[in-house]
Picture 1 (spheres, one colour):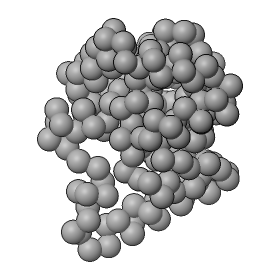
Picture 2 (cartoon, one colour):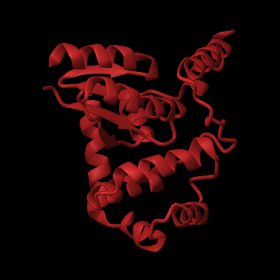
Picture 3 (cartoon, one colour):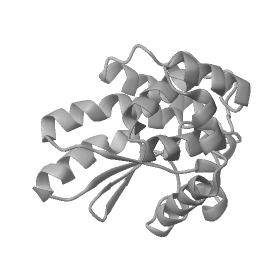
Picture 4 (cartoon, rainbow, N blue to C red):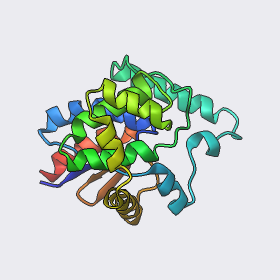
Length: 201
């Protein structure tokens, strides 16, 4: 069975929407996705890429079409929790380092659920350390300990390593999925991801 990975950054609304649909795919395929924290800003720098909002801003009708596809995805999957974050784009360095720390503490799944919630369901300014601390406490984490860990060199290095390895494997944005060596980009590729999982069994 091929390993299935979900490379994510909390700053991507499409990563959040994909995260909400992943459980459906896991249930149908009986395969658990491995969540891999990466830093999207780092990916953009390493690949000379930029966010769709920046990249498509000058193209007539394109951003409107992207919004249409986003709404179609939301309707298709019955998503009711998504709200645009008014602070977007958010510098996610702190909370992505927090994801590395949470992974090492074996609480990544809960951390991912909660941080995505604070970004895209109950949107907050998640690049403000005070806001992040409050959100962590609200979600039942030891905020002081977790934030202290984000400043440890091994945590910083692991996030950098994840990001560089992601780019080396072909990543240029988030959400990115790997089924073994096969790469898929974007929330709309989840159907292809599912097909590849079933094909690789």
